[in-house]
Length: 152
Image 1 (cartoon, rainbow, N blue to C red):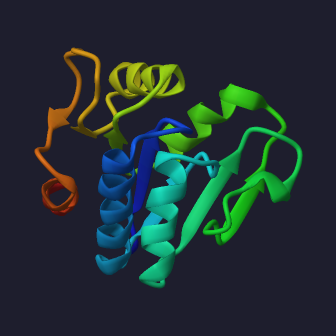
Image 2 (cartoon, rainbow, N blue to C red):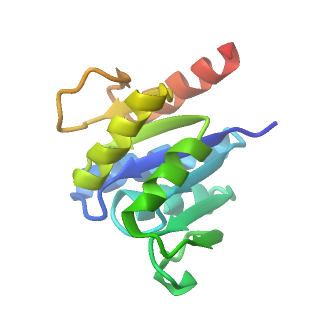
């Protein structure tokens, strides 16, 4: 059965973070699993682009009322109309979460991971919080996630 990898991070990001997210998306798709995210720009766009280009399924849980707000690499846009509350859907629907850098919405998602004990891997997350484990790069993050999922 395919697993669902939540990818969280800011709607804007540096070129370095974009490349990391892109590589994570590619590696999720190569592993044959599903990527779920907020469906917008920045980290979400980069991860979706990487997964899409590898033929993977990308799901965007959108905050607004229109499918058109999704980045062009989202294969399955889910319109919610619930704003930031959609973060709960992303985290609860994921089997494991990979956080890349981030803004305050990401911080909210990290806290939810801690609250519900969702497995979490962090890459260049700017906050010092005692949840999840750190990965040094994109490849390691997906490898760690896959290894974890084999054990459960």
